[in-house]
Length: 408
Length: 83
Image (cartoon, each protein chain N blue to C red):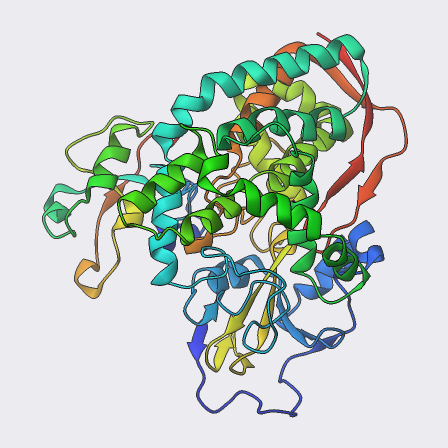
């Protein structure tokens, strides 16, 4: 089940020589791929491949992606986790101190965010998050015909997350827009990325301003991050950038995770019935939705030396595209991978990544409380209109999911 | 922990991915091996108090046990639950 990664001193191709892996004519950042990724993902899983369209290696088997994620020194993040190589191109924004950093620098900033988002902290905010989820679901059950994306998947995290960070009321509409830019910007220089960056200035300005200590309410996650600059664990300059990581990564991912979970319950009434019969499945239902839809579809790494993955040689300084979504549907790892089963043992899915960069927040609390509220209060969720997909170079999710939600 | 997740051992959830944040890779170490493991840090100690299954004197988080040749043959038992 595990993949083999070995150092390869002289086997990899030099500049200009074709790489020793199959070439695949697939653009994983094209609209038709977003609409129906499964057939192409199956082809991607056949071997380590080279995608000529963007001059990048691709790994899509679960064991291979897991192995790459767990070898952060050979497959580094400091040269960017998008297609752009920070050694060759100026990043579109100042690099993240955590996402776009390697150990040992990463270890220090990660430790700070780990403490800010510790299990003890999650226990403290749990009751408030739970009550807000119940209130949100109660209100939707009164309205009955809703858009499950705008009215729940977005509305719920927006009702709790900015408060937990300690953000001011005004300007919060920039948050989702900013995150959408960040995640599309990991992709190649296609229309989606260029358009996102072109309209990013006001969102960037908002986020930069909100990350300052004076704009963050006491007791929130933002203020907690800044407090670590008092004890010297991070510098005064680093603190706002670490708050930025919370804002970039903490909201849109949750929105798409929740959207995936509700979309699963709406498409698979048998799973909704199981959840209603046993609301304690809520936590696992969220995990299974993250495996099944993989809201974060892809991330890149850059090789720091010549290396072999399962015998396929890759040179130094090459971008490697990891297909998290394909790995989460790999039949070598999962029985009936294309079946949504909220009783499945989901342990080992890599929808949150793996290893030192694994998602620090994980949205499990938000996912669990919303699904538990639906399990207890709703009889059914039925799609009643056209489902519209939202296009982003990294995030997989919906623009609109019109449903009728009935009271139990 | 990494050995367990790489080989699909379901009893190790490792929700946080080995970053000492979640206590879902809890194991009971066979007593004969306990003294040969690296010492427990304060974060691991605090997390074990919040583990889902009963904490015992032999409890450890498997993400904090780095496998070395010295640990070849290590015997670990899984708790009844991780969440």
